[in-house]
Amino acid sequence: MHRRLACRQAPLLPLPPPAAVLTFLKNIFHRPPTAENFADMVLDALRRAWPEHTFTLEREKFQIQQSGGLLINLHNIYADYRRADPAMRRQQLDRFVRGMVSAGSSEDVYEEVQGRLLPVLRNLSGVDLMRIEAADEKALTDIMSYCPLSDDLGIALAIDSELNIKQIGDDVLKRWNKTFDDVLQVAVDNLRHQAAPAFHEVSRGLFASHYGDYYDAARILVHELIWQLPVGAQPVAMVPNRSCLLVCGADNEAALIEMVGQARRILFEESRPLSADMFVLTDKTWAPWTPPGEPGRALGRLQRELLASGYAEQKQAMDIAQEQAGTDVFVATHTLVERSADGQLISYAVLPRDVHTWLPTADLVLLSEEEGEDPLIVTMADFLEISGSGAKRLPYVLPRYEVVEFPDAGCMARLRARATSMDAVNV
Image (tube, rainbow, N blue to C red; front, side, top):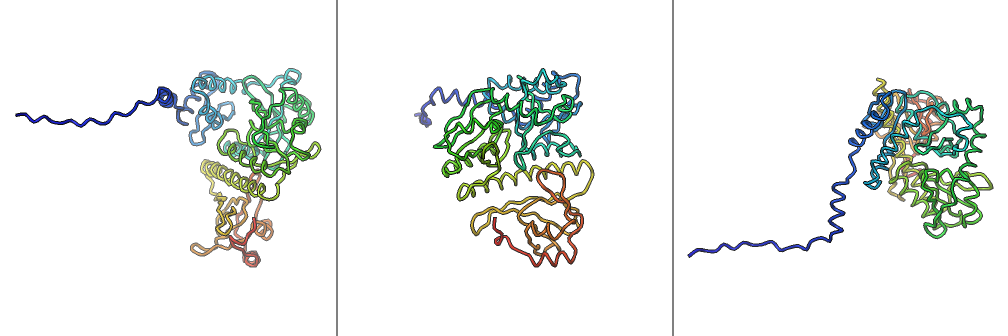
């Protein structure tokens, strides 16, 4: 008699719907390349499209150096490439490469480009970062023609074309025999007539632009667009990236809080970030502004987080530049912590004794006299006042101070008289 072996069959699971299967397969087969593979793709495309130049890929910096001096940063285009529809990615990459080749050509005469001049907003610390990475010792004002809108945001000029947005500098203005203000007036007027108003109401009283041409932020300069929105007598705006202009009224607390939330998402999740500054419009002039109450606290927190992120990028670039130059300078960290007493953010930087230091601005400076001992904590304002010429301001948009020698005994005595603590500082 044979014993029949029983085989246990796993219970059958229901098949997923066809749409779910297609989505799964699409995610598998249309997954965007890694940053490393994308950089290789761009490098190969540039070499084929621009054979008269050689190109060097700096993987750590995620940028490509062209033999003619053009520096191509890949962060923004990679972010756009990842978000693009898979069917459009190759077209987007080809357009980017053709735009780079076009950007490397010489500018046309003024009369030929006058109708294509447009204003652009630029994050000045971002431009400064590229200068640091390229080891360019020229001042920012020597490599970029702009007028400031805030400490970290500048208005620049560009020639718009189908393939690229080409920024122009003082050398071009001199060749044209034009002043910056003359060309800016033409550029703003061109932008004024480029497209019909395109805003939608995100929430009650908060409006966001949706032009889709990378000039949304620059439309903050077209004042009549702002006054046409139903936001009251005191319009307020933010430009978190080039593709977004947010507008609401200064007296609408809920809209202001929502505006800060929208700006936070765009600044930390989308490409081409610009600024966490908030501006208020009076007549024809924008000025940086901080609202009272909860909106002001939310804005301050966002600005502190963005500043810490900017300093981290600056430090990384400076550390690499120091290593490549063979110099030995301590680039101090801008550290952001949350105060346990009330949840507010507070920043500090450490200054060690007998170490050549580049010190970032922060709420507090921790002077470390001896290893293992508690540092002396003072406010940045007190440190700069008492240290005097011992802290020399360096030529960067995000401020840093060069400290070659630790404060002497007299300075330290005065600083001890003003010593504070993390919890005592009001921010």
